[in-house]
Image (spheres, rainbow, N blue to C red):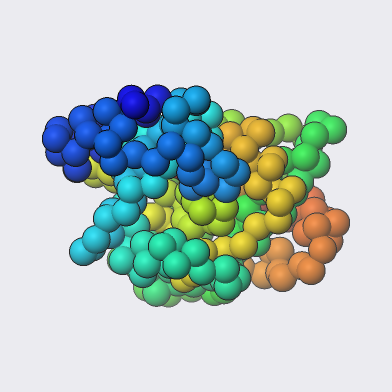
Length: 260
């Protein structure tokens, strides 16, 4: 029987009209599925369901999600990321290689945690490089990490008193119940590209994932090397964020989930 599927124009362009029509007719679409975002059961015969196509260098995987969790879309990932998602690798990873606007050789540390703002818990990612970041094409001392992010639309934070504004075009890819990447706008007319990717899908807590699905966005905080450090508890992480903000060493933005 026909399914309550959403197939975006971008997904249709990738899989072809014939395959898209078969999906919509219910020939190739599962009735029940595990949502690729929240990992809870879904039923494409009973509720609106999004088709999400993960595209690597050589292969592609079609996944399904509650329409309330993710829109139908094409997500570009590395082949390693795609194979990791297929195998549902659960090992924790805390670093990745960013692409523009920071040099590829820099390594970023990424920590997930819940941050209390205006009496409500919000899912957050805290990004801190392991070494100073200089502007591409320049040589010498200095750290341009925050200026580069401000140029991309992140806002300086002096205190964690309010939720930062949404940075449209950027998003956080939470798939198979795990954190995969922070995406930024690609070339005009192109798909989003990864600004940061986990070497392997990054485990997040059930509370973090629930908060992300509730708010449909993740707060990203970024600070220069040495500002935050590796904090084992969320209360210590919050203290470090407050101190970095007070010293003018913190930028932030609210990033929608997976490009929504």
